[in-house]
Length: 162
Image 1: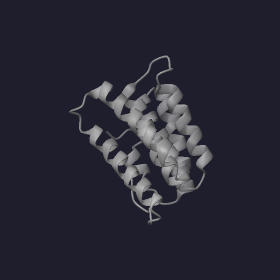
Image 2 (image 1 turned 60 degrees about the vertical axis):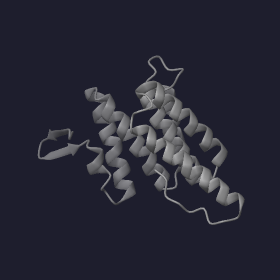
Image 3 (image 1 turned 120 degrees about the vertical axis):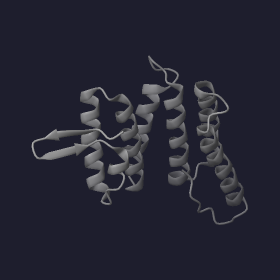
């Protein structure tokens, strides 16, 4: 659902699918930051969560891996097992994104594989084995295992994971 707040003649959009289309990464990061602030102030925590994930991805795409990792660490702390109100579905999503980011930034297949397995467990606890979202995490795990095998054999490991 699109959420827009009118401010004079300007409209600030918090729709992640709209913000994702902004080609300039610096502008996109600024818009995501403004959207996160707005979503937080309005109490739209699900929107805030998605925008924080998108900002982590944007930072990663800009080569700012430390900022991406800090954002993902913050989300893990907010929604993880040790948080005041753990949310297993969100925790699983963050673990999935973290794993993909680790492989793309560092080529750390072992850690990414472990994170994806943890993500699958969290997803199963939250939504059950029959939920389609589990397939995406499983696809990432299969891809990472294939990339790990290819890297071990000296093959080209460029592949798209999500």
